[in-house]
Length: 184
Ligand SMILES: [Fe+2]
Image 1 (spheres, rainbow, N blue to C red):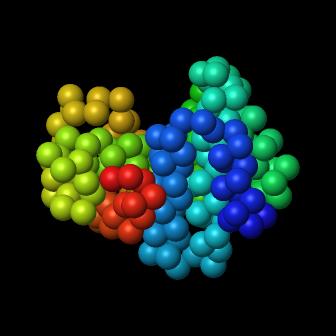
Image 2 (tube, rainbow, N blue to C red; image 1 turned 60 degrees about the vertical axis):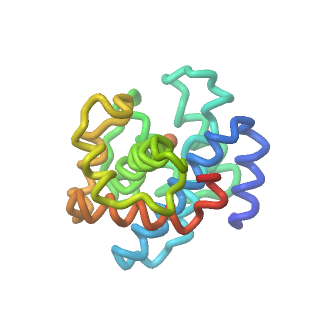
């Protein structure tokens, strides 16, 4: 699967621009993580991030199928078992253990993209450019801020060997790198 094929499929299945942006942001964080961890297949990591929520609109909020349909769609596009496993288990409803490095990376990158987006949107300029890692870390600690963002899930970056602060910084830099695509 090429990146273009994956992205075309995302655009064919997802209408909501913000959801597409969320997947692009997750892709950017996943790529940065792959590079940071010295993974051989950055593309696999990136495309897992890009595709992980491809079924959100198709499943219409049905959490018992979210991730399952996504894994099927990714498989049809040519995704490996490693990728489809990560997509499947990022939805905890299925009770499938988050076990591989790729699973763990997607599991913590997904909510981090939400936290960083929320932290950018409360700035007067609503831009990522001037956002500093320390303010995102402060937002992380403020429980009422973007309360839907699961802090516990982000903290599981420790399972792939990253300190929380380091992970937040890596995610922020990764998203700043594609700020125009994210409209942030
Ligand atoms: Fe997501």
